[in-house]
Length: 441
Image (cartoon, rainbow, N blue to C red; front, top):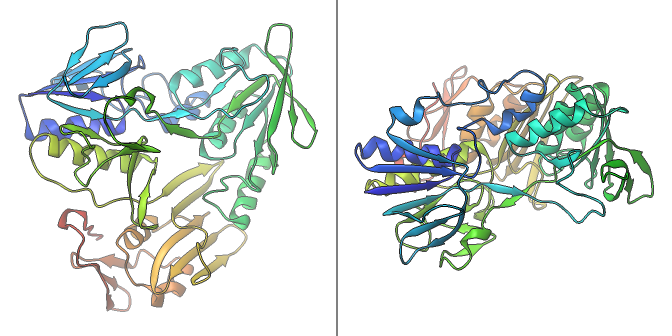
């Protein structure tokens, strides 16, 4: 049996490891268009800050592939897939035959139409790959005024800003939404985060966007023009608006696409023996009750494991996922889980706030469907399990607001127990698969 895996990152490697768990002898080929062994993408800003090196950013040992009997093909780009002949068409190389295929190509940076933006300029680029960080590191050494503009105030933009600031640049984040992390935070938590950024030398221009980049005779930026007409100096411009599923090479493959790759509960696509997972895949959103693209690392790993298990002949279903983000901004820890802003008037919000801590819980009836924890994120894992499993816990809202979360456990029958008070509430969905049940002890 030959397994081919497109993507040398979280989803792809989780898939490979699951295959190897159940198939000790099958041929496993992992291919990537990047020229690095597996590295932690969320740590590329830490590389700019000097907290990670070329070695420590890699989360698999150098002999990982050999030990697991994986064949690694780096610097090899899949340009198309012939699902009838079961071949991956590889740029500049021979076609690659497969018996079973996993597609985990991740996302590609979205670049809005901005007059003057040129990703080939040494002073402009995106910030999703290790090579992007290396490019920005080199650019920072060659500038005089030390002014950087980051377009986008989401997770990518904020981490790019931190990295550039660590290189000695003054950074301005330009964000179209009225606050940073606008899709995950609310007004209060967004303002707290912006203040922490401002305190550390990163300005924020919200409700704005860059319409033009002014260039020098070499084609490098000198300033940017905002939609308000304001002009800001710029030596370096980074676009960190977000990513879109990297699915262009699947055109004509017969694989069903709707914003991303459509899969069933086993992570198989519409084509037999072809599976998918990670940031390019549409999965079931357990909070919003609909198919969605949720591009976060834990889900990519879980999707890859489910796909690899099924590819090796052992049946397993994926129960779906939900949005969850965890980030630290200059010592300010932030966790967002599920639905952080109400989707309708029937949903209720409960908030606790003091000088350093902000907790917000969104309830749909008795069911907790979302949370924001800022400043104190203790118990976020327990809350994540409660939200994902759709448990009724309205009677505990005051204790949650006060940070009394670690006193709760969830048993194998989906009952929430309060250790301190010794009582329980019985409320658990009967149709969740056994493997998705989480014990907290």
